[in-house]
Image (cartoon, each protein chain N blue to C red):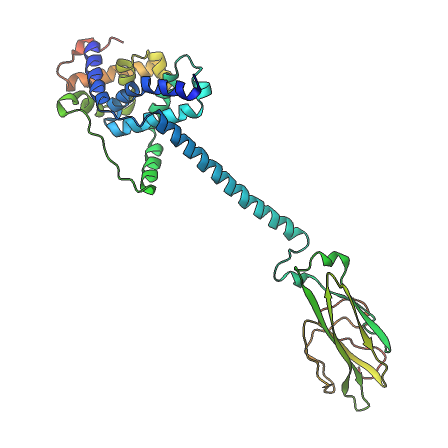
Length: 166
Length: 199
């Protein structure tokens, strides 16, 4: 199996999950697709190395999340599209009834939102989240606590008494 | 709450995934290829500019390039410039200057000698032109014998028409060359002659 076919297989198996998580983070489906595609391109550029990792998707996830957080990337992307004469087209996301949690997340500070998604959606342990976002584990725990408290106030079907369970 | 939050997030993510339209691995490969080509092109362009700048820098430090204006740096050497006639003037391009000539460039030197009359007028004795090139780096001119004192001698790089007579107490409007210098690099000048009462 050549490197490209390996990559295609990896792409097919990983893209949706990564982009789905990024959508919850950004609230923008096109943006989520864009950053995951960019992260995939970067993975392909060094596929001979990334493919040897125990979990290549973790590498792509980290790159995609960094890209999603980078304002510079958004600016450059906008300039590239403008130069190519493209008009930004936002993909329609899930309907309003399904995005209450996304809307509630959008009101959280960025760091808290990252921590919540990486922990509760991507099932990453606090230590790994701390490594990804470059913060201490205690800080990540604090973000998770505050985020859950805030979400509990905004989403009525969440039980606040479980807030401290991390 | 954790389980509920996990479920809500998973639902939102799943709903989004159903609407995803990935560009695909092949598109990623094409984009990467395009970027590499663009990067290589940019690098090649930068290298080309650096090479041109570097060459110009090197040329700027060495002999002038064979372009318009490069002749400005080339000056013929003239021997016997002040020798009384009969004699032979010799115009020569130094070997180092040959490489500094423009392609197919020819250097023309116009020259003239004058003598002083009893009435203190300067009259033309000899004149001529000499052409020098890489193929013919040496040329000569003949100085004839004449009566009276030697007066001005002019060597002009380029074409110049010299008058048959120069009025007393004057010189042509050409820069003076150091008095007493008999050989060397010339462009345009007059040659004051020692030993004649004119001065």
